[in-house]
Length: 374
Image (cartoon, rainbow, N blue to C red; front, top):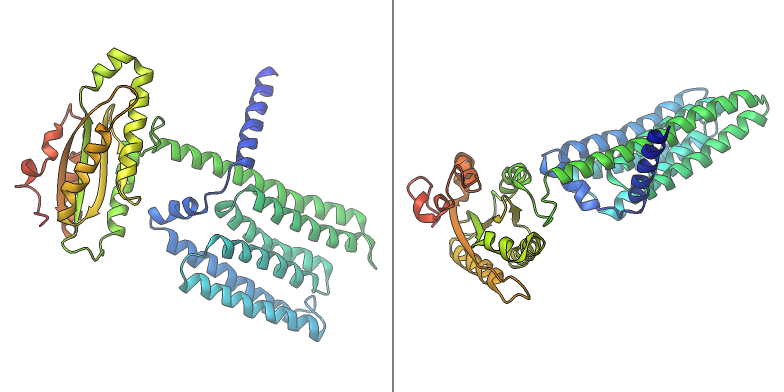
């Protein structure tokens, strides 16, 4: 019993964090973009919008659908607007956060109004199932607060239907109660539980590719990101663009740990990570791949390579309150068009030194094996 109670308390603590954590909309989108799935998701969301348009037209052909000219006109307007949204999703860029929320509001109101216009209340109640599509969208791309507002709207609409079924001309309160309980399970409990689970798994996935001390990518994260990162930059207009890999090794770092202790050593690693991140482009990949080893990957012009390495070296060696350190930096460059066939060589640049020495990533040592970046 105590074990179960502790487990429930742990879930409650996680739920509080889930509720209070700000939504990183760009990161949500980036997760799918990095895996080449964003275009497919846009097609899927647009397809759902087109499906809503089709439902609004087809229901007008049923005796249980809208029975007045005004009701049919409203349903037709919703159908046309849903088709416009479908085109936006299919042919436009991924929407901004504000547009995403506007889409949820539009769909919530539109689906509810069309369902309320059905002459048969049970048919309209069944039509509310389309709101599950919006719940799924909110689960993946919005936070718990937007999902909560969406759920509150759904509960309000369910209440309107339930009241009409219970106390309308053919009132059946038991049917209304049964339908309401089923709807609450589908529209309230399931979306919240699923989004919470997605949040937990997403955080675990983030932790698995992130160095916990510095917040940089770890080796696994770098290996997962490198190919998509370079593919996204394959058509850059930089003259003679090359993939540049810088491998940074803090000099005599073991002496820092032995002299000052591991707490100071950790502080030095965090300081070095922050300084590296501060002098490279925000789009560059920066990772900690070993104890005191860091890797930077970016697409640059050949003329920029030495300047980047010098900025990193100077930043790490800059004056510090405690335990100043210097760094040795190995640089490998490869012509951007040639990178798909040379990924094996680049991967060797952040292979542990027990297998491949850092010096193998210098321009000189790889010059014979790698296409020149001139």
